[in-house]
Structures are given as C-alpha cells and as structure tokens.
Length: 223
Image 1 (tube, rainbow, N blue to C red):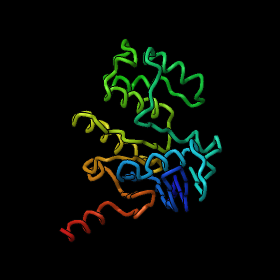
Image 2: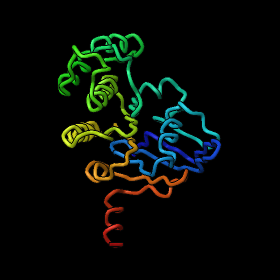
Image 3: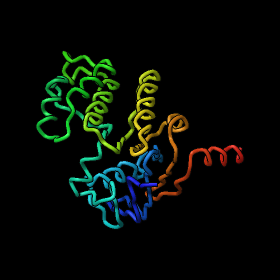
Image 4: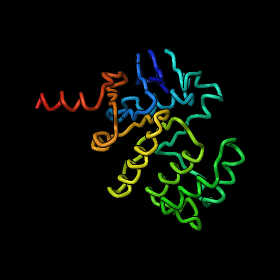
C-alpha cells in the first residue's frame, strides 16, 4: 500500500521543548488520528510534514517526494485551527483570490461545497461562526482536488451536528483509496468513529501508531 506520508526520526527543538525521533506513516485510503496532550508536539509534527517548519533531524517523504517540492505540495491541502481569511472577504472573493494562486482551483466545486455546508455568500468571513469558518476552510481545501488532507483540530469546539457533518465528509473523502487524511484532535470519540489508525504523541515522543480496532481491543482487555 502506498504511503502518502513517511516520517522517520523527525526531530525539532525549541527552548523548553524537544520533538524527538518521531516515526509516522499515513497509508493511502486511510485516516490517521494524531492524539496527545497540549504541547505534546502535534502541531509541530504537522507543520514539519507540510514544510512550514524545518526539522532539526530526520527525513520526511510527502506524496513520495520532498515536502519542499511543488509537485508534492500541490497534492496536499491543510486546514489549521487558527487559519483564517481576511475578515471582510466573502466566499466569491475568496474563490477569485484562490483562482489567482492555485493552478488546480475548481471554483464550481468550491461553490458546491459552500452550498452543501450552508455558507452564506453574502456574509463576510468575520461574521462566520466557528463552525462556519471550519466548513469554509474545508471547502477551500477540497476545491483544490487534494489527495491528502492535513487537519489540525478540525472539529474542536463544534456542536455535535456540525461535527457529524464534517466526519461524514472525511469518510467520503477516503472512499477514493488513493486519498488519505492525517488529523490531530483531542476528541477521541471522533477517532473511534472514523480513524483507521491512532498515533499517540507524549512529551515530544511518538509512543505508538497502531490500528484503531487493535487499540480498542487492547483497551477493553485492560478494563
């Protein structure tokens, strides 16, 4: 099975924090959930995979290539919890802006997702609720026809109905088994529903990555 992400021995050091020797894979056709306490290194790991941060050690393969390679990055879309558009922009303006910077931008698909998500095209971004902002971020990501989604807390703080809609979308996305998702979250019930594998970061070290069903079986035995 093809791996969309292969991380080996990833290290990143900050004053007071060290991400050490992280090994992580995301196979095509799967959802990998990255969990851990605040400050464990989840966002640092995601940003290193995306070439936003430069690692201090280790190797990363993204879509079979170097994360700095435009051909690899064009197949990846990311949505972070703190990713926002300029407050005065409306959906149509966002679409025009994306068309100018993204060669594979699909404006009709973006508008379709906006309609599916019930996003009001007359509202500026600053008036969107937290759930609407996350839906807009996902619509923008999916309109690029990515093979890989990298998501940081995509359902955090959302009401159960919105969370359910977004989780259903993730399951739809990986029906094409050439696609995959890496997401970090604190909401373990979401991962019980959609994840194929769980990776656990603790204090900058990846303690394990295993199939979700096996993990749940092991937890049941321990109880």
